[in-house]
Amino acid sequence: MPKMKTHKGLKKRVKITANGKVKYKRANSGHLMSGKSGNRCRRMRKLAILKGGIQHRIKIALGGA
Image (cartoon, rainbow, N blue to C red; front, side, top):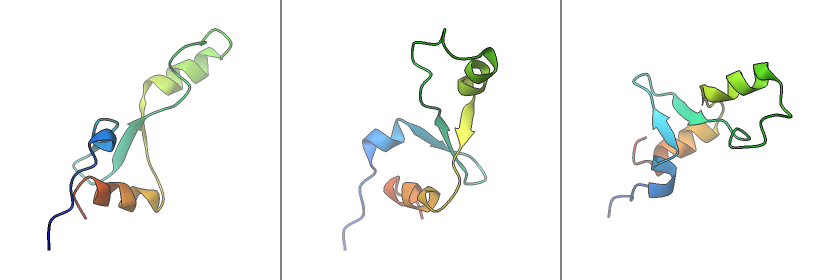
């Protein structure tokens, strides 16, 4: 059987850590920041760690298991 191809769009948006967690950039942090609180802006600067069953599907799409 042929191998699965890596999902290139997803590869550019997420990173798999050494322990197998999925890190991604939070949404709503591109522009229009003046209406958001400072705490919220600082929180959105950091990469977030994905939880739940979608994490497994993302790893499969990136070529891992």
